[in-house]
Picture 1 (tube, rainbow, N blue to C red):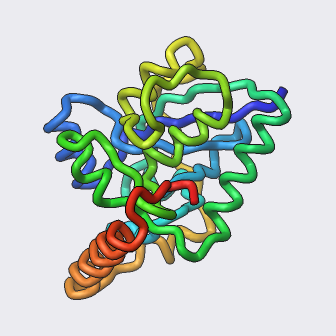
Picture 2: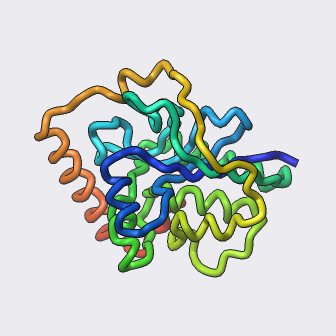
Picture 3: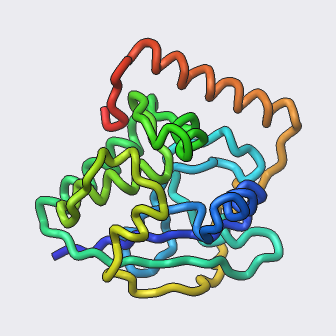
Length: 214
């Protein structure tokens, strides 16, 4: 059996704080770890701390969450034991997401989740749909609706009984931290959001009914 780890993250960002105020739920980000060190979080997220809309497939590190003066971050860790075939499927899916240059961050589904409850866009994921797809590929759970409709809270409930840790994870310095934390002018921050939204809308029009896996 192979083990994978699903990690719920209590992010320190401003958007995360707003999310907690609105939902009353502590966790605002989610990712997958393939080893017990919990130092490489595979997910879809911003590529730079100060450029949120420049986002996609990411290998995030602990200091991406415990940035600046923060020395730790809140986390809830689940451990899953998956069979060899399922593990190969999961690794293949992760590799496809990582190597496909057409992959986008599905900001539109994430932003409208409370109202529209999630929808797929061709070759696009966010942290929720990506992790839920991994859970689907594990074959360990009965998922009553499409993977892209699962929220972080839904997955927290789905994973009940497999939690091995809930508390604070300490910061560990990584080589990519300085690049991740670089600053950008306001026009770049606004422009990246406009560009991403335009690409997603265009893809919805040209790939109607598109599957996020493709």
